[in-house]
Image (cartoon, rainbow, N blue to C red; front, side, top):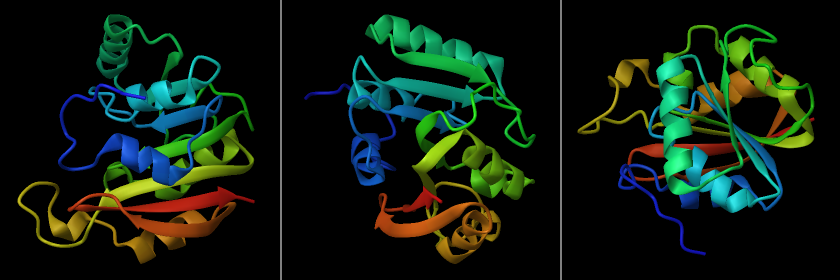
Length: 185
């Protein structure tokens, strides 16, 4: 399958990242804090296919409008945008236990209430569902946030495992990022 990807692939290739997350056809996926580019949303929509669904979740209405426009232009019909404050339990209008895979990339380091975001991800995930977290490595890089605000993988594991998750594995997500896969208990 050939999937058109625009921009940012040098940092994190979304197809490779999503494949590492265990994405499959017909899944329901939620990209939490999806960002205006839809860097993971659109490739995920292609990977889950017409019988799957991808929630593009963000707090900025303009981000969601951009995702809707891009999906329309690219002829992708299995994306649903959701405005949400991830730092509030129940802040996402997504049904409890309805999602197979939640994605959280380049967000956790900038979120104040990390525990609530992880609990909210757990709320929407099915039992056995996956959470994949991608974050900046804690090394000096030519781009990205200051090193002192980045989270190392041990910190992320502690945050996520304090909710209803078990750690599955870590993977290389590009030259400046790591990925962590968790399973909801």
